[in-house]
Length: 433
Image (cartoon, rainbow, N blue to C red):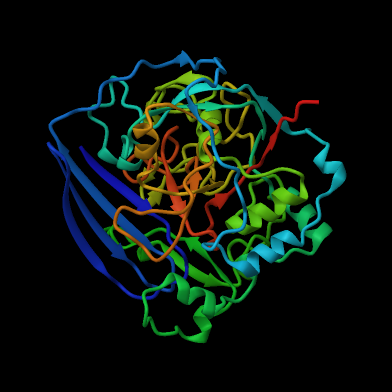
């Protein structure tokens, strides 16, 4: 089994490092890690992980309704989540703390749907008929092992937060997003190896990360061939000076960091979903299915989500009608009435990302009850940076690259990073009266 893990890293890096590690983690399994930091104007890492094993994952039953059993006997109860953390930027946390909740919005469930809680198997699926798919279209190492999780009832936004909604938030609070602020070198140093020299001042100006097609034949291993950090790019002008969101009010807001999403959530009386809530909701009531719509492959002609058709990252045939973001609700909802859970934009979750978190939960041999994620971020190869989990895939996803529209696909990014294909939606607890 071979695994490709793509990591969209912080925009705060500047050199190239290649590391290869071989380790034996099980009797019949070898792991090879190859890390490449692509320090070209910023953010960019790719990690390749190939695993050779004699033991194939068992096939899963598909298109079954998830269990609605809500018993908590034998479950692992979570600790309360806290926003404060040594791994977060105190300056940005202060900006979030200064946001005042809008009392009217906090009582309003318009545009949300109640997700009925239940027990499900969280993690990568390998249904029959997918044996000949590209390895990048199949479960990755951090999606395994599958493990039982119980999720309580909660409310969830039916679609991503739109430009119009985010603009209303900014107008009400005067909030300034991370991409609209210069980079704080003193904070940046904490994410870098000791002794990393300070970059030129022009690399510390307000900026965000944008996509452009790579030249035909350019290496996929160099993310700098299609990602670049561009000055004066932010949610208001997503392609830089001269661009705007006019006419795209109903598109998902992009170029927003995890901190920005937290600030909006606080203002609206909501919060970001946990990774478990996200995957449970994305599955839409289907048991062990590959996608929110079931097991129909993306190559079968029907467009169930906004993702790339063509050859990534060189071309897009735009067969689904959208080259980049699409208006929310442009594609059919899943079984819970949620739109764009697959494709359009990756979406922030509240959780730290850990490559071994699923293994830790599985080792407890109990049902995880409303898990809140690991206490800190962990990468299999080590890193100075700490990352938050993002879910759902984007308009750039393709079976030959990241297959982010799969229910179990995980990705991550540093909380201060903003990109052209990352947005968010919110959830709200159900309070018994």
